[in-house]
Image (cartoon, rainbow, N blue to C red):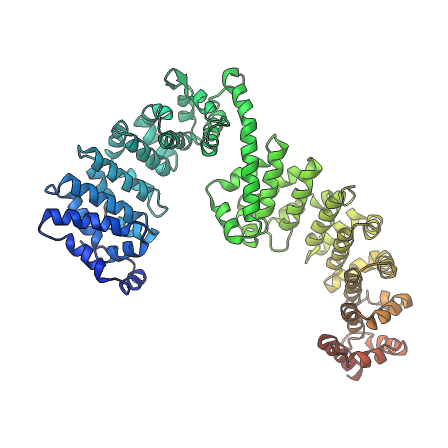
Length: 606
């Protein structure tokens, strides 16, 4: 039987096939059984840690021949065992390797090998099966196709610590839902695996524990059974509690905590059972510390790397665990969970997909209703990301009363909360509908707006200016807002331009004026305010190019000759000496400023 790879992969590998690789395969066909055995042993040594060699041998047809030798009755047990070892090594290469092995029907051949009386051969077959079944490309259903397989695997659990480790690992990876749980449960998985929790081998204990975590997951039947199981005179839940202790490896503590959690959810552990729950309560404090540390680690790993963020989110049940962490009783765990989500929310892709799929905004809004400042700071910062224009969560957040909540944050004594409150409002206002902008202005109030513009924290001031800039965008919106709040906004602009502020603050303020100047009716609030016009003129001649450019935008929007009343505005600005300044700026060494000045002058010539 031919064993083929996908064409592109086969062609790329074939070009690198060497004579030595062919030699290994040729030796598998030698009429001398001893030479065949030595050839397989040499092949085993050649492929260890060498993915290129593994790919070469697969392309050259080594897999069908190895499987043939493994299944031949005339093959010695030693040869069969070595063949299973080589196949296991090939499976440890790439996912394409595993696909090739599956195409050659390796699983039925290995399962047949488990009927052998020889323990070493059985262990080699199980080791290879373990490697294949733990690969993401292997369908779990292949374990359940033949109804005789599961009971035979249960029987093999007693043979050695290796059979115990490999079989438990196969079960834990291939138990993916209630149907699989039922099959394993009905074939005595609980009774056959329970005693392995006291094995002298840590690997066996750990794999057995993982088995129980997947068997008990959202399964009341298994959970209710586990609570009454005795192992060496001790109830299973008590063994799980012991595995939570600080002297146990973290992996064991977390997995045993899962088992107990699933049993609690199923009602298998009573809340008044002091012998279990109080002890569990004590050790869960440490479990809280572990979860806190895990969330902090994920937050740190995902802070600046999109690929890592993707891997974290794609980890099975990870988002559910983090979201659940938002409602933990421990403040430290809640804070760590929020920080983790905040880190992951830096991904545009995840904001559009996973954060929406898990409706992260719902528990987040609950956290924001009542939490200590340290949690509020991180949660409100994360809300800023969820309110970005491309985030699907933006609309439901708006509908849940976020405007009032955020306006409330702007009044906090904590400057970080004031920053996040106004920042989130700024994101909310970006390309928003007129109604949302009106809601923001109404809830915030002009009095609070002035307080924020007078804030001693520079970040608060900058984000408030950013909010005003976003509110005053889209011509109909500009005119509508300026018709109701024009006087106050113009006072705020004057207030900032006359204050002792840095270049960035003044630039943002002039950009707000440029937006106002883009309105149809709103621009008259500038044209009728000589004080503002003189300030624009002043900044056109400023020594800093950023301020000159921002002032130029104001002038360009005021004199654009395609708009009604442009001639009158041009005449007034000419009388103020604006044209003379434009001529001067058209000679500027700064190309951007020079181009803008020339464009403005063309409006006078048109």
